[in-house]
Length: 285
Image (cartoon, rainbow, N blue to C red):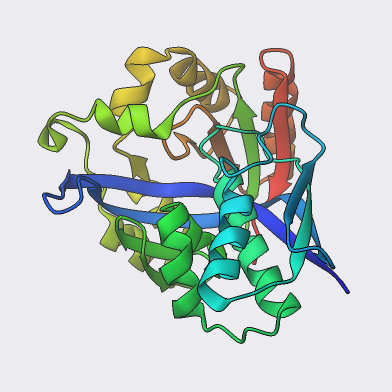
């Protein structure tokens, strides 16, 4: 039996860092995320031997227990006494260490696929409980629809689909460690604090202009001083006509939203020579 799962990239329409939690050291977050039509593709097959095999088209990616997909398979096998093996092939299209949730969405797709492969009949809540142990963006990626996210990522409140628009994604030639960026958050009170409840309401109201008004990312205050190219990309996007330009996650990928395809195409063309990894995609419904 072979199961194919699509693993779409996510963007942060909003990200607010509230405070560091004393209990586990994670930061309490409020976020609004949505998914875009740039996806990895996972092919999941059962193996007769009791082993986990992960393959990928990117030679630099680990395929052992350092890989989120491998961890998901190992956790399901141990927790539910699965003695069959599994082979998971990952066709990567989402940039790595980019703030687009590539590892998390692959993990979520693997959990969904193995839940079907082994007829585990796990609920969304059960999958989230497993997923959050592997990565804090996994719970959102399991839902995959525009959502408000709270806690360290385990609270997911689906909203309406965000207003349809074009998205230009630009990743500069550098990788950013989410863990290291959060380690640099000394005093969250000194960061910008976009209003996630107002942003959520704008999406529920299907109000594109209000959505733009309330979008923001606390972590830009940490990442941009360390990697000024992020601001340079934002400035170029606005110059070429973006409705808004914002960093996704901890960066370094910056995305622009455009209602008009012609403007999105102009931004795409204008940034293509500036950075190697530039994508023009749609939002997902």
